[in-house]
Length: 322
Image (tube, rainbow, N blue to C red; front, side, top):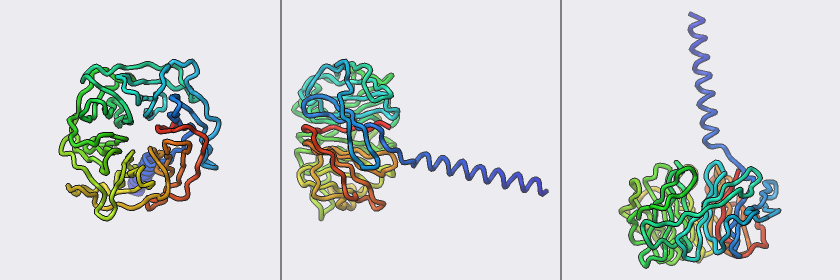
């Protein structure tokens, strides 16, 4: 009897430990080793990240053999392994790019995909968004006269040329960044040339029931350049380039033109794009100028005092490699 009880206790103990380990790994804080920036002179920079000072240093061109071979770059995102970068342009071509990343952060090769279906794709200011399964990438398309979001397949870390129009409606004249929740049931789309965030239902490659949210009733947005969900998906960070603020809004759905609630995460900060490390401890912001801000995130979702690294040229896009 005692042996039986002892065995039961051991099972409970190890089950508890395994559960705890799994939970900590899911919520583990990862500090990036490298920060990738799209530079305003048309190229890409990779910088070392110093977590002791929250600064960027030793920034160099990762495309050592110029295999990318283009300028006018705009958006960048990396897959979870950090071995592939997906890059969009702002000069109205049909091309998107994927670059293979080596352990030291440099590119080993880059290739282009020309979006053939639907016709007329032009990347412009849109920032690419890779889904959680990493088998689909969403591309804002701004040059057709009617703004749209495309869903493109990703196979073996390469974007396919045959995409589909998600059918998102009511998008602003210039769409900035976008994000989806992990379940791929909701999309949040920044409206730079408007004062709203478009929130759409998602089913497969189809967006529907899009509602344009203007704030929370007391806070009113100005020019929204980017959005980012926190890891728990209860807060949506909204970068308001026009107001020099970053807001955090509740994702509790109201089915109205306002969010359930919003608060100021950081004020008096010029920001264009945002990315957050795994574990939600640091926010990285570009300002489409010469600065990159790194801001510790407080437990209430606000940002603590930010550290700024300067000396860049009109940097819009940013991505992290661990």
